[in-house]
Amino acid sequence: MELSQSFEVSRPIDETWAVLTDVERVAQCVPGAQLQEVDGRAFRGLIHVRLGKITTEYAGTATVIEQNHQDRKVVVSSQGLAKDADDKAEAVITAKLEALSDTSTQVNLDTDLTITGRVAQLGKGVIPEVSDTLVAQFAENLGSMLEEGDAFLLRARRPPRRTVDMPEPEAIDIMDAARTPVLKRLVALALAGIVVAVLLRQRRR
Image (cartoon, rainbow, N blue to C red; front, top):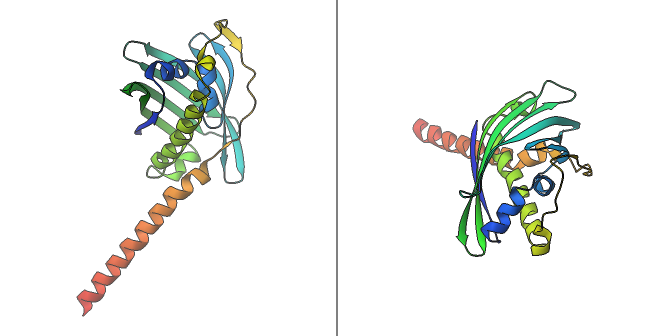
């Protein structure tokens, strides 16, 4: 499944790039993410997910396979496997920044996503809209982080291989994220049903 999304942040492109290429900072913006270990350009951690009454963790790895400063482009390959089920997710994410002005930046995301298991049962029609909801949350978190000021953007020197002590975040509530898309579809189906009923009634007359 291919997804394309974009969002805008009210900061210059250089500052936005500095955060998006700092995994320990950007991980704090990703809903449900808990970074645990960094090994060069490979990262390991957990994604906490809640589906109804069931809460599970995806143990995953992500690897930066391209990072082009000149084009402001990053490509990341990631894989995740649920600890207590056969659910699996794989994605290749391409993020490219575009300067809209001296003080604003657009982040363009293209994702090639494969999901199996319970989450996949939501259906291909709902998953893109759930993804839009999660990206919007990420954009809001990133915007808040960037608003903390230039001093925050000073990156400390860190060893290339290290563990990360990041607190466990609140799990992503997939059903909550899907609720609005599902309601939209139910309303659309209801309207379609009304239209069909009216047409049939007119034809009978």
